[in-house]
Image (cartoon, rainbow, N blue to C red; front, side, top):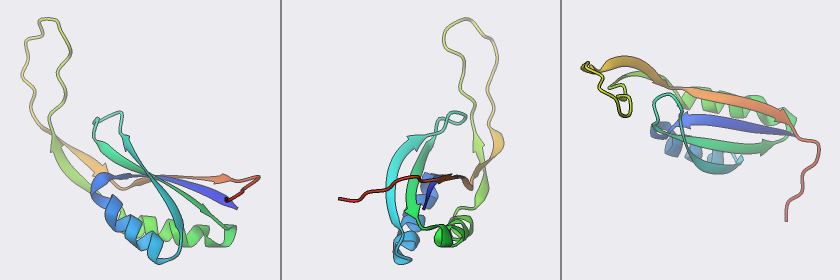
Length: 108
């Protein structure tokens, strides 16, 4: 058995959740936020048999595409910094996925 932890952008989360449940994956959805852009993410925890891991990864890959977005960098807190912040284009979205072995599993 494996535990798949997938961090995806909020924009992709509802669609991904619907498709994963359509394929009978048991999914726990957690709200999270990214450290770099401080924007909303969703973390999915998916417990599945080893033979179904690749199917779950394929679904995540197909439904969590990266995209370009303009963001305005945060200004430093305090101090007298004399500069203007301009929006910069960054790549957001996609998914960061971890697959971990599960030694023991119980469901009540």
